[in-house]
Image 1 (cartoon, helix red, strand yellow):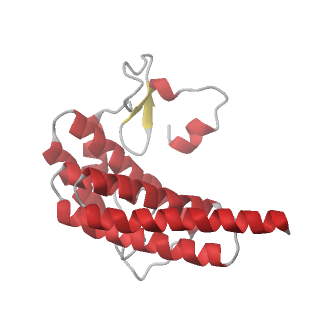
Image 2: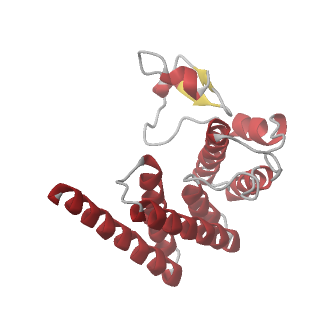
Image 3: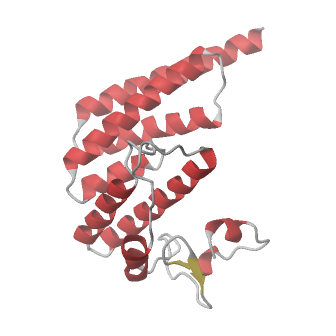
Length: 209
């Protein structure tokens, strides 16, 4: 069962849905640890890395509309979930392989990083890929800052797109501080606080009007 089908049901199967890739297997047993995602890491790694195809997702000349970009977001999220589970199983090298495979098959040059990129940055630090983590963090944070400046400058409230950019800046500053990257963390922290202040000013101005 894929995520879309699962979300359309009128009862919660999540505790019984074992992730094995882009879909889950419904089992007659419950997730023994609700704090962790229910994942078969061996099957999921094999499916994501060896069995699935990612045709054209590395081609910058292909146009993907918002619906297709949503699919890529789901794919990236699945790789993040797999990597996190592998790290918890003390298998950081396999987690590293999964993350690098994801970045190769779905690079920013073809489909721009989305808000799942913040989690990817965190995981890359954990598997020792510091330079890649910093490169992605810088790209994500700068774009989020620029987009928020544009949206707030137009007098918009906190739209879905704006909330995602605020989330990115908040997560990046936390992750960067935790990994000793204080200079970049402080840059994004200041941007985060500035945009929140600007949003409050816009809200007050609309209320006064």
